[in-house]
Each structure stands twice: as C-alpha cells, then as structure tokens.
View (tube, rainbow, N blue to C red):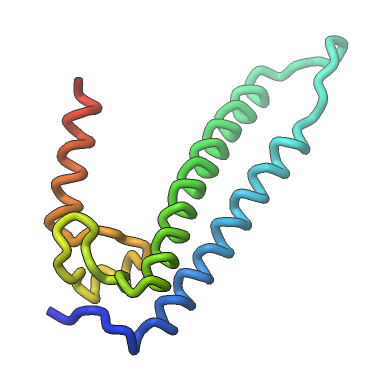
Length: 128
C-alpha cells in the first residue's frame, strides 16, 4: 500500500484548494439563485407544473448547498491537517490512509476500515 508523505504536500494542497474554490462557487451560486427567485403577486396566473418544478429545483439546490457546506468543512479540516503534518493519518485509528483513497477523496479523514464503521453507525442511527 502506498501512503502519503510530506513530499506530496504541494500536490494535495493544490487539489484541496481547487476543490475549495469549486465548493465556494457552488455555495455562491445557490445563494444567488435564492435571491433571484421571482416575486409572485396574487394577481399572477400560476402554472402548477412550473411551481412544482421550481419547488423541486429549490429542494435540489438546498441539498446541493448543504452537501457543499459539509464538504467545504472537510476540505478546511484537511488543509489544517496538512499544516500540522497529520494529513494522511486516520483520525480514528492513526494508521496511514491509502494514497489511492487520498487521491480520490483528498479531504478524507479516515482509512477505509474506519470509514466503513462510521457509515454503518450512521446507517444504524437513521434506521431507528
């Protein structure tokens, strides 16, 4: 298994910075969409299909913004771990995170085994 070492810091800093910019753009765009919503007056003719589409889009935009916000927090935490030289170590068990996992998910804080445990716990909590 290949693991992260400090010689790769610049590469991962670039990946995290790029993704942070993308997430901030998503958050800015979803905020702008909410502000640009048309002002409905009581005299306007309402097409219920258009309203349904707008409501659906609003729900999708809200979920997209929420996901972007969570991922942005993960990105910022990963950048902090880079700065304090703990990047690439699982926050739970302390083992090295596989480099392939870090490349695919640069903000990941957990090795595959610990991530699986977190997902199982989350799934069990949502079923209650």
